[in-house]
Every structure is written in structure tokens, then in C-alpha cells.
Amino acid sequence: MSLRPDGAGLIERLPPVRGRLEAERPLADLTWFRVGGPAEVLYSPADEADLADFLAGTPSNIAVTVIGVGSNLLVRDGGVPGVVIRLGRGFGGLAVEGGLRIRAGAAVPDVRVARFALEKVIAGLTFLRGIPGTIGGALRMNGGAYGVETKDVLVEAVAIDRRGRRHVIAKADMGYSYRHCGVPEDWIFTEALLQGEAGDEAVIEADMNRITEAREASQPIGSRTGGSTFKNPEGGKAWQLIDAAGMRGFALGGARVSDKHCNFLINEGTATAADLEQLGETVRRRVKETSGVELQWEIRRIGQPAGDVEH
Ligand SMILES: Cc1cc2nc3c(=O)[nH]c(=O)nc-3n(C[C@H](O)[C@H](O)[C@H](O)COP(=O)(O)OP(=O)(O)OC[C@H]3O[C@@H](n4cnc5c(N)ncnc54)[C@H](O)[C@@H]3O)c2cc1C
Image 1: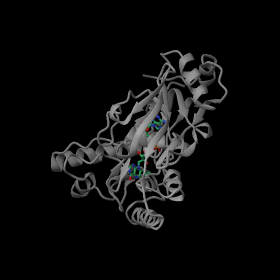
Image 2: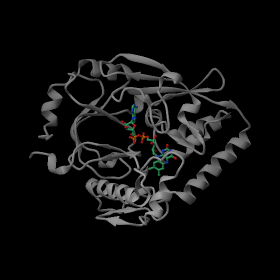
Image 3: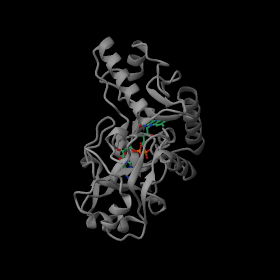
Image 4: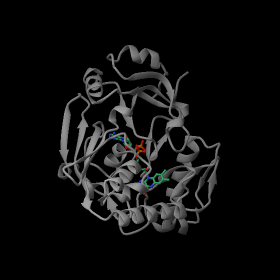
């Protein structure tokens, strides 16, 4: 497939919005890896109603892709055809409901939810301190850390489908498994209702501090990375297989397998998305050769390679 970038032309085919539409908006600065090409059009909806109207009025043959804060995302160098949607302030609600539940907008960073829970003395949500994404990303990825996953605390989620219809989805209908959500890929989450527990402020705070320290000790969190590159295979750890395959610290172009946590890939400053993807595929091949295990990408790759773009 090839794309002749014409974001301005695409905007003319889109319905009017109250939010913002930008043609050929670079995406690299909206992701942790800091690589990749532009969105043909980047749409920042004003609120849920604006998003629903936009989806209802956008022809079904125009591709729509939603992103969070890009902490689990590799945007390819040729950019993303169609419309990329990034939720902002209009999806930033945060409130306590019924004593121990928190309703959070999909654009709220997970860490803010964890801090809000501490402030309100609600336990059970501290694991969110360890995930540098948004609630939307946590819902889609079933993000988890320290033995707790999003599915363990979710009551229900709200999503808008590709035709602009609003759905309230109970946890049982999310189709959750490890780092997987069964809700159709083109549904956009707008909020979540999370269940907390009664707790003690000092204990919650100590838990938060423990997570902060553990992350700093084990992860290259100041780096341009996408977090865990591959899912842990059944009964094993991806990083151990990568280590055993001799890939710790292995470099390709400007991309390197982290020395600190070898399931993380790092952009050392000059990497392209192609470098990072090729490095990931090299790791997968070596692990398959040495252990027989076929690692599956956890990082979501979107868009098209540079060579596929017509100018
Ligand atoms: C240093 C580091 C540490 C990490 N540690 C962890 C960890 O401990 N545990 C863990 O689970 N993850 C971890 N991650 C990965 C990442 O933070 C999570 O997957 C996170 O949930 C992604 O959220 P995001 O907002 O950045 O989503 P993005 O990376 O922007 O997108 C990820 C996926 O979610 C989809 N998505 C985003 N928003 C929405 C929405 N509103 N509706 C529907 N789909 C949406 C996107 O389409 C995409 O498929 C880590 C990443 C980094 C960089």
C-alpha cells in the first residue's frame, strides 16, 4: 500500500469538528521512542460528543487509529494514513464514585489515577503508578504491573464505536487476557470505572514509593523506549530468553537492546522506526533459533515504512 501524503485534502472530506484537525502532523514527539512519520491528519476531539459526531460522519473507508501517550507504540517512518485520534483535556475527568470507585477519563495518565487514589485513601490501584500510559492505553493493553492487571480493577469501560455509537462495556464483556482486549480494535475508549478497596494511607503511600523505587532500579525509564517489547510467553519470561540468546546490549543502527532490561529496545538518539523494528525482528529470530520460542510483539506498530510513501 502507498500513501501520497495529502492531509489537507483529507481534512476537506471530514465532518466539521469542535476539536482540532491538523494535516501532516509529526507523531515522533507524541511517542516515547521519538521516531516515526506524521499522521496524515491528527484529530484532537473536544469531548466525547465531538468524537462521536466525527466518527459517525467520517466515511468508513477512511482509516482511523487512536493513540494514547505513545508509551507502547512504534510509529513507522512513512507515517500513518488516514486519521490519528489523540484524546486530550476533554477526556481528563477524575472523580470518586460511591466511596471506593474512581471514574477516570481515557486521557488521564495512569500515574495520576494512582496519586488521586492515594489522596482519597483508596487502595488497590497503586500498580497504575508503574505504567507510564493513559487509562485508554491501559484498557486496550490490559496493562499490568506487580501482579495486578487492569482487568482486576475494572468495573466497566465506555467506548465509542466506528459509527459513533456509545457503549458501556462491563468487565466480563471486555474479552480480557494477558495484554489483550477483545473489544473491536476500532472502538475508542473514553472512560473507565475502576474499583478500589478500603485502605490505610500510610500503607498505600509506602506501596507507591516501593513501586517508584523498583521501577527506577529495573527499567531504563529515562530512555526513549516503548516498554516491554515482547509479551512473556506461557510459563516464561521474554527477557530471560533474550538474554540467553545473547542479545543483551545488541545494537542495530541507532537502536539497542537495553543493557538494563533486555526486553526493552532503546532509541539511542539516531534510530529510525525501521532500525527499531528490524532490531526487534532480529531478537525474535535469535530467540527462536536458540530456544524454539516465537516471541509475540507487545509493542503496537502502526503506519507504513518510509519506502512505501509516494512523494
Ligand atoms: C518505561 C516503560 C515502562 C512500562 N511498563 C509497563 C508495565 O509495567 N506494564 C504494562 O502493562 N505496560 C508497561 N509499559 C507499556 C505502556 O505504558 C502500556 O501499554 C500503556 O498502557 C500504554 O498506554 P498509552 O496511553 O501510552 O497507549 P499507546 O502506547 O499510545 O497505545 C497503545 C495501544 O493502546 C491503544 N489505545 C490508546 N488509547 C486508546 C483509547 N482511548 N481507546 C482505545 N485504544 C487506545 C492504541 O491504539 C494502541 O493500540 C511501559 C512502557 C514504558 C515506556
